[in-house]
Length: 214
Length: 214
DNA sequence: ATAATGTTGTTAAAAATTTAACACAATTTA
DNA sequence: TAAATTGTGTTAAATTTTTAACAACATTAT
Image (cartoon, rainbow over all chains, first blue to last red; front, side):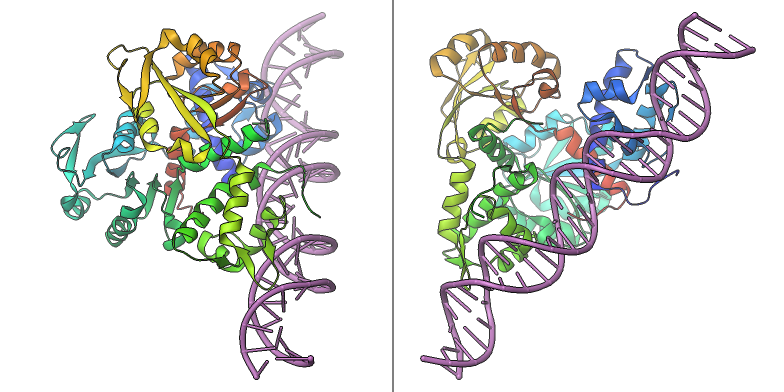
């Protein structure tokens, strides 16, 4: 069957999970694993693991299983995390600073080149060696640095205008922490939303209804 | 048909989204909306909106649509966000501080009663009036305050041990930002994971493959 | 009042996703 | 070396989720 051409979002969302567990196993020096064993560790059906992986190629070997090192590399390639996407982050508030500090961008396909903030108190400082600039220099910076990805850590009210600017600069890829729904407004845009509030509300529902499953 | 008893996770994950948009409309002073109009705003099929809501009751009126105020209240009840769950947050690093600052717990069913940290530099301070305690006082505090929810903002290595303690204290509800997979280890636990890394890796895939849709 | 329109709740169909089954091949064991 | 075991890739079945269709009723317009 070789490769599939229409990969579903459900499959894609499981890839980082596989990658994470494989990184672990690799660190532990383990060389091979079967879909069955992996299933037990990850909590995803062996059948589904095999089916997911077979969307991209034939990485296993009958009677042996998967070479962890090899599979790890393959998934890395599939995710495209060795191509570096020049990225900026907007908003050096608590959340923005946490993201800038907490995420190791370089190891997963991004290079954080600048942080932009309207509060001048922060301007001139750096986080993890990434400089914080005043928001006015956004346009020039994006052009000069060929920015393709923006991380939005700004309040909802501010997002509409910033998004307009970024869109006009040709930026089409967003990691969005604001409550503003970008993809409703712009059609040809790739947005990965992180709605922390929604996530917590979901937890609230599940607590109220003793809804376990994961 | 009245109510359904087996609500699927897909439905639950859409509820906060409805709630968010309804809050907006309410703030704007709009009184009624049809599933069709709502569909256009949210980007979810009218059919699906109606089907989702009908899992919980009949909130609309033929020829009229939904009363925004009423529907807003109903969803609030469904989510259970007026029952307050006593909560603690573990880890006052960048991420923990961001969460403590950024989320308005009280409006969505939680009360953040304490923050715990092993770095003594932070102990004694407060964030949004919530005190930061030394990690040693965790057990006593949880018992005294009848804590039912824990937010985990600690590194992966630390999570295993902390989780063990929390579990032994009877805490079964977690909002988990650590890379540690709780639900694989403990069966009877409600975990809402926020894997920021996974989210960003998914974005990376989508950028590499120009995978738009949202 | 009556007709025309709008919009729900609900049932049925379609599409997508997950799980199971198994032929076949490589590995391991005897 | 042969037999038994392991475990993949793949196809088929089952399940879940989404979308479409429409009868029934309320609202609005004439």
